[in-house]
Length: 79
Length: 375
Image (cartoon, rainbow over all chains, first blue to last red; front, side, top):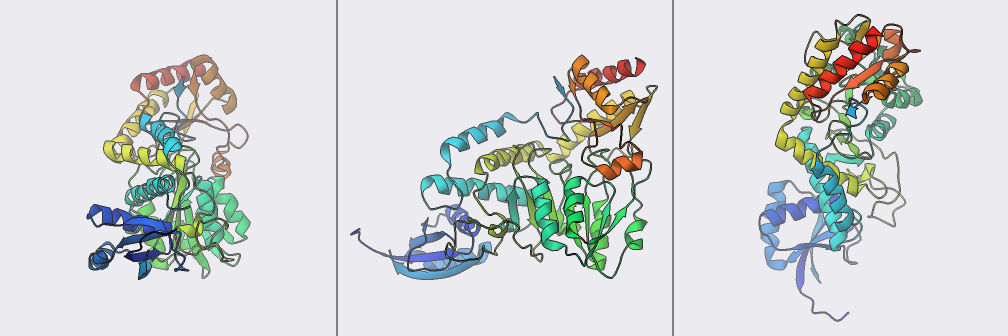
């Protein structure tokens, strides 16, 4: 597929439940992003990852801290 | 038909439950299997229900709540995972086979606290039966035969004081009595969705305290870590191998929302009022023997009785054939309770009530018992 790639913040989780917790918290606070299948660049995590625009990184870190979400990893990827 | 068998399963359920299952069957896929709309919808429904159940039972982290198909499965997971042959466990004569049989299978030493003529245990027996290798107290919250409640506040404090696990079978009380597992000190709370929670059959679960690790009973598909030879160890995935009953859980979610809207206390009060009315209406009828402790109104909405020397099955059959009243006769999968009452052969007729029963139905039930007793 030849699609234009942009830099994204990708958060992975140990369980689908944690991924859903992330989605619920982000939606509640109006933070952009969505759940996607885990990209091939990441070998850990559950089947779902949170993909968000790079500029939301600060807001996401803050959100994770306040909601007690425990990500397995956070990284930047061109997706 | 008059349904007085809600301790077996709640036949009378709010319409929103069936509607939610119907809608789910048209809108959701499989939980945690991909990221398209259908599977995400399933994951959201199940996550939402996880939060509702955690809130209902006073569990602060919804990830510590795993779905099963019923209490039996939840109890098997907890007991097989936490009890070893070298352990000693304290349990009671009030237990259902869903507690007893998994316990017998572990090979652990058991102290089974006996019940008196009213089906009550002596709380002093907990301390008397404590041993160096006592690992846990595993018991029901309410007898499914008599409706007698066990004092889980006392048992929780006893377990805390002696560093024991407390595994609770909340089959008869989840959705009727407020249970805050973290305040009480419950290590694992096992529940079914189809009784007082008013959800569909095939739903249930276990809530696991933060410091308790239960190994997987079943392993297999998890939707994650496909190339690992081991099933994931993280909760709740560790205890949820295979495709989940997301359609049923959608119904359970609707039922939990219904319970929250109506209020557990209010539904409980209505059930207890109906059970109390029935008890008062039948207790003085000649030939009626009632089983259980009615010295307190704080009990599950069950009235268990026999008529004269009649076989319980014959009475239950007459209640249905002549009056259209559904009750449960027999041993109720609680052999030790019947041994305590001397009813192992004849059984007991159990009337169990729901918030959807009416006073008129109670009146018909009392009249039926009176007429059968006079025959």
